[in-house]
Image 1 (cartoon, rainbow, N blue to C red):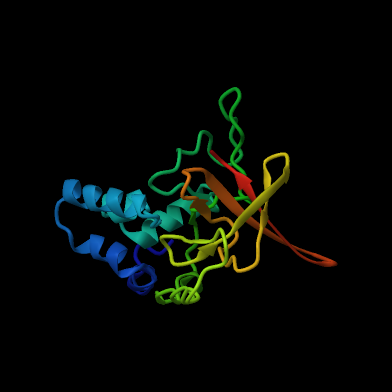
Image 2 (image 1 turned 30 degrees about the horizontal axis):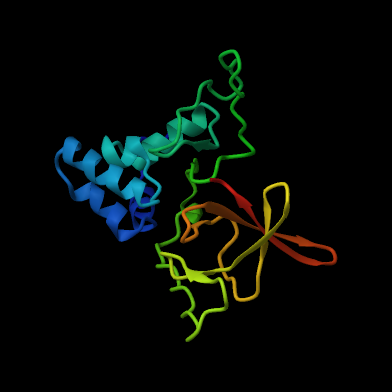
Length: 195
């Protein structure tokens, strides 16, 4: 077992958004935790052991792999209730190595899994005039939630460019999740109401 791998550690930190990578330069664990919590609440994926506690990325990932983890929860996700292959508490699901929850942390010791961070492309500019019933989201997308077809399913109308899985809040306060699925006969888009 290799005790350290500075090339891996460099690749790991270089793959993080600048705000997350800056956590390694904060000296106090309490201050690191406060900043990490704020970043996690903004949607950034925070690995507590590495980014808050300051543990070595290579050693942490190697140890996780040794115990059979393919993913671990990020800062705001619930802890794993049973180790891979272990018996979960009554009523809790077992660890599923093949289906990591959205926003979890991939466990890997391959440098190829940590490409340098590339900022996301900005969303397309909204049109000069929005379609009827459309509204811009905080991320710069245009949401156009149509009428319901029953069962909590709502149409996606022309002009909507919200990505699959995003949650939008309409001006009336209701929240909807955008869905998209490619089928043999075309693309199917819809919203489901959350609240």
